[in-house]
Amino acid sequence: MGIRYGLFFLLLLAAPSLAAQQISLDSMMRLEKRYLKEDSVRAKLLNDIARRYYTVNPREGVRYAEQAIALGEKLSDKKFLAGAYSAMGSNRLSMADYPAALDNYQKALDINQR
Image (cartoon, rainbow, N blue to C red; front, side, top):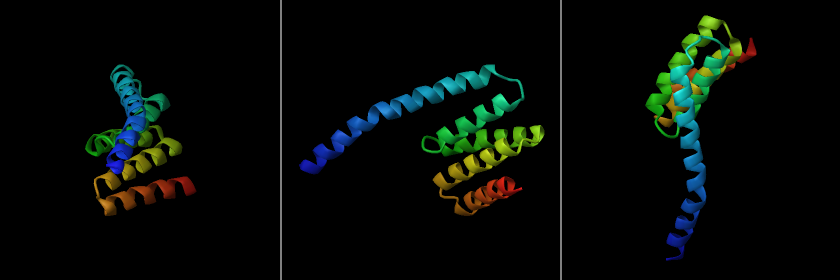
């Protein structure tokens, strides 16, 4: 019985944090639909969205990471490109696609070491 109450208490403590993350993700999603300029602001936004999705919906996170990778390559921005590959790795890891996760983390590392 004590374990149930302990788990319930932990859930109550975590609920506001989870709700705040969802609100933040929702806000970023609305901004992403309105901010269409292909610049570093959009690259950061796509990376942030991809990172937030890895615990909620990693398939959607992969979609945003792919967009962030494409934009990072287009902008020739090493920082955002490495971040996008890292976000892709996190989402692939959540999907238990370990070889793809490792490949993406390695790409991020290689970019950061250049």
